[in-house]
Image (cartoon, rainbow, N blue to C red; front, side, top):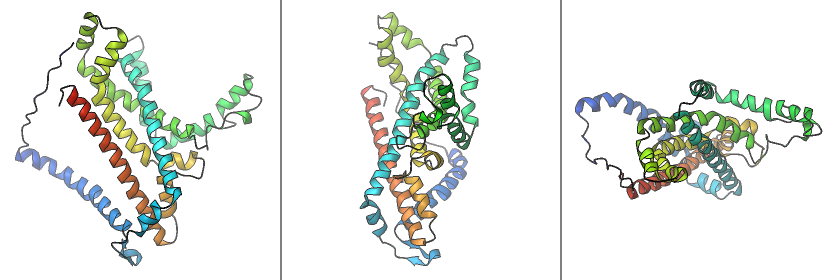
Length: 301
């Protein structure tokens, strides 16, 4: 069995100079993000004097939201898009990172090409999905010309359906390069010493991957999946343009509340945002807790 060195738990406290250097960043984060979070929470409980509404604390907005079946359908759909997109991205990114680590012929070119989606906005990815995956799009016309389907209209409905394969495709296309780079950075930092040692000791290829490589990759996998999942559940453009209508994801539902002329519905929309933040925060905290337990069992924490 390969023994891993247990890192020291002793950490040097930050000096006064380092604290002062971090102060501007902390002030911006607390002022912009923390302030917006507090203000949104106050609005969701009826505090909006600029709208002529001051009912704080009034939980009726949450009661009306959580008692509606539409909210739970939208929440389930939102989590479905977030989880499936993140898992598919990881399934593709881990083998890609392992392949790029080996430096095969043309790997530098392929690695550079794979990074291109990082430079392209999500709106471009949505437009590409409409052009490529829609009925009458490039792929459907190509399938019809090859005789795979009778006509482009017979192409399976990928876009504007509640299975959301078009939405998931856009998320995966955009996030696989990011995940691959994060995992590849961990691989390059580790080197191949422990994997080679495991093979010398008689471990087979699949045993090396599941017992040595994958546990070592967990920091990169966890950090990349946390970021991508958080974005997926809060994304608006792809579900709004490529979604299948009712039920809608929570960001789209919140947008419809905010777009209403009645100010009361805008406070209801803020309750949607706060609820989504609460649910996603609980999920991410549970994910981190499970990861830390996993690392403790390995003696890494």
